[in-house]
Image (tube, rainbow, N blue to C red; front, side):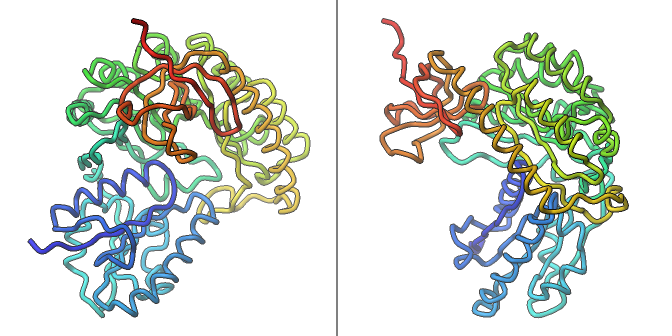
Length: 443
């Protein structure tokens, strides 16, 4: 089979990264090898994200850059997938006529067939239909040699329809994979040397609806916890309203479940939470955080917050800061509200001025920096288990890995330790990482 070169440019979240891994695995059967640079490629795939306007704008900028490359290399084919492709469809071809293929979020498994329909110099192919079953969820993507962690998609889509969010419209309704299928994939990963798996889904807490086994998310966690060779389990993303007492109990009972949860709160004001259609109150969120900390005292809790949602007053914003003070998140992803076409929030009045949003974001991020440093300093003196991922970016003489609480630790050590779990005493704490000293096993 003739070898061809594939370059994938990925925008967005961990799910998009894993979608790109699956697409590369699928196209390997068609003779494609990964290229390091777009100039080397016969096929370029732009895997897009449109969760915020800025992310969508980056996609169009990327396609603009690729236009000149295609003029120099007429045989080059360009495909666009992901959420922008799902949202824009044929309109994307109008804006970027040099694109050969636009495929939606349910169509990743169809890409080889769709590429065969693309004629060089002809009209581009567009396929954005939703499917009763998303076949790509089951594509196995073997990890690169030496990798210690891997993503595993367990479900796709969302049924919540938060007022600001495009996911239900672009990823469709929730679909969960068979538990048996997931466990089989994880066993295969363990056989390849994977020590840590991260379970992916738009709302993993509601996993299980429609599966033949009737297994819920805590049940799946317990099954994975019994897989030999898997030392660590992580998951993202969790919706607070679906965080069950049973899942919280898993942090106490399942040894391989890491003490970290990403639990997006989005706002600290009940009035704003109701307008967002989040389905919980600040009091309910605070209660669940306390119950998580009761189950796992050193749990690391990270979150998302949106500032400047329509109608957010200064008092609402102060309630968000107050909630942050009560919880003291280990880290936070924070954003200014971005209008997204098709969402309920597009119809809302009382927009917050851009300069007000910017000022609120600045205040919030400064406060979170204080909390992050405070939480990181609590690690000083502790001996932490570190899964060693590779050589540190900061220094070739240091290794890097993560604690069970998902904090980056850099420490001096030999490369033979990569892929192993070691113990480090934390000696210094910074905003984005920790520094540690390797603790040698007792003789």
